[in-house]
Image: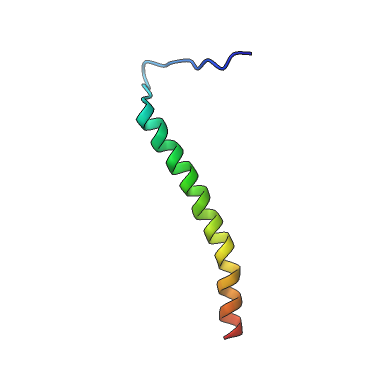
Length: 49
């Protein structure tokens, strides 16, 4: 099996664009993890105060 990607002249991809896409993907997962992790803690603190 090859891991060769097919290049498309209509949608050129540069290394910087791929890096930015990776950064946005990782940061979106981090944001969701923070939201899902903090919301029960904040709800608990609001209920206990």
